[in-house]
Amino acid sequence: MVKILKEQQTDGERKMKGKSPSQQIDVKIEELGDWRGEMLSHLRALIKQADYEIVEEWKWGIPVWSHNGLVCTGETYKSVVKMTFAKGASLKDPSHLFNSSLEGNTRRAIDFHEGDEVNEKALIALVRAAVAANASIKKT
Image 1 (cartoon, rainbow, N blue to C red):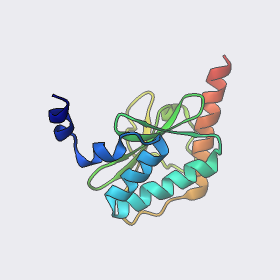
Image 2 (cartoon, one colour; image 1 turned 90 degrees about the vertical axis):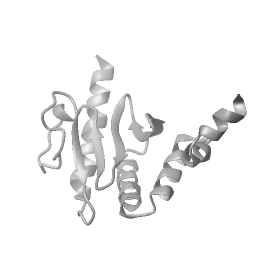
Image 3 (cartoon, one colour; image 1 turned 45 degrees about the horizontal axis):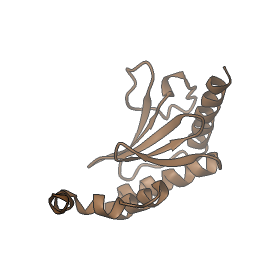
């Protein structure tokens, strides 16, 4: 029975087994092997630059970054890399980075397409605002 279950695992699942969340994100970036991996890697670096205490997690089969609660996720699709901010609707976005999931009351997302430039300064500010929002909720 165990042997059958192991055979049903994908190569990606086998590569992830026993790895830390940061290592799982590394595997995901490597497996993508195209512009999406490069974009996810770049976004990851900016997230870490914005908050040196941010925690990398692997939930729901995707990269997740948290600090006093969920900050954002990094999802990859065929033609887009999506950064979803858990409490994005409550964040100020003066640079108008949010371009997806705009209709919801809680989440907001940024879709990055191949060749898109990243407004690094604005994205770092947005991540910091999300971390600050989590900290203010945690205090109450």
